[in-house]
Length: 144
Length: 416
Image (spheres, chains in turn cyan, blue):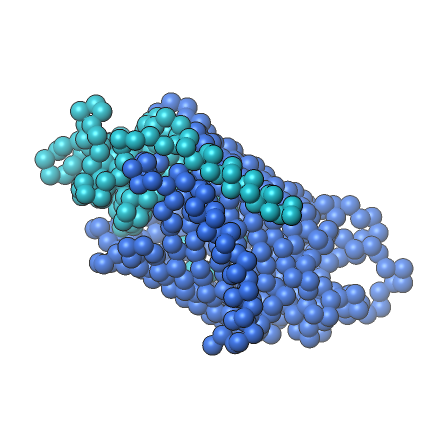
């Protein structure tokens, strides 16, 4: 009985908290996916949405045409990944609204240093598990 | 092949777990739910010369949920061992983390959580409850250079209080990226682990036989692989764990500092190379246990990152192949000694030399991303040469599995 009460409480807690991060109008639209290739010119933490942690945002200068993009990476990957200014990257993401005249891309996949970082699945749902806390656990062979 | 009994047991476990998973998935709107299944196969579960083969099926459920700048995370995992069923364990951890920006280029990160692991009766000594705290700071010194500071504290109590400990690690790293697509990184770390009461009470009669043999009647490592080791008659472990006796009791600490260097190079868009070297020194104390052991997939508190000094070199290659396939392969050479831990003969007689291991480890991981799931296969081969003949072993490990992210929110709201 106690286990059931704890379970119900836990699920209620999750369900009530769900509404905190939701806003409409700025979302991953798979029909607006683009691929851009360029150089990271600026890395910053920016408050993007009400009710969420600040996002890691990359200002990328496209190789072809020198067009600038803001690429939203994720809230927690500021600590999860080290991305430097000057790095060449390829980004797959959804083109979103343009708040300051610079096109914004919500990143789904980033390729840099010969590695691919998957941030969302192909339907646009986040697949990151960010900060240092989430990296703990035992080392097992093959866990790169 | 999975036998019928094991299959029935897994079905029963899943009948209990699946409803919880599904309810959690539905409830966690706005969060993210991850499901994964890993199937492991090993020929040397206990990593000793007395190889014990086993297969392990591991299921896990993780939930991530943001509440403003605070994130809640929880993870449930069940690992079922086919042969050594007493090692099957359930683990859970939960916690909050918080990202605090300090300008556009810097941020603090704080996390707090609790964790528990629960083993079957034969291995219940490893069952534990713990808490941990993390504080970190990261800043861009320049667009191409990052400085990071991190501190982590862990407190854990075990069913067998010999393993209870308090530990902390502080680290500082700095890196620099060059236009040649080269990254250099340097790391310095200090760590200290304090076992709160790692000693057995001194026996009344003076010891006249080898230590391990004396310990055996109470279930303390015989070093023979006979299944009568520490933990009792059903303990099939490496029999390599042997605690020390002390009339004074009390605790014992071991501290280290380490330096590491890493160089990474991107070649084109598909190849990533990296090489790293770590040198670690024990600067205070030593391991409080006479002999320590390490199990595949099982958190063994007697052997971890605090227990050794020496050096390690690693080389890795990552290939980003077409059709969303990624291949990673790596080789690690390590030369470690374990201060305070004695090499022992197979009869359990101390040989008068500190245990030292030289290990060659080859690992490869092939991963394919499909539309809804990620499927992977991992192969590892280990050749471990030790001054303690019990730990002179080689073997390989195979793991395959999939990871699945459940869509748990309304699609138009998936911005976070």
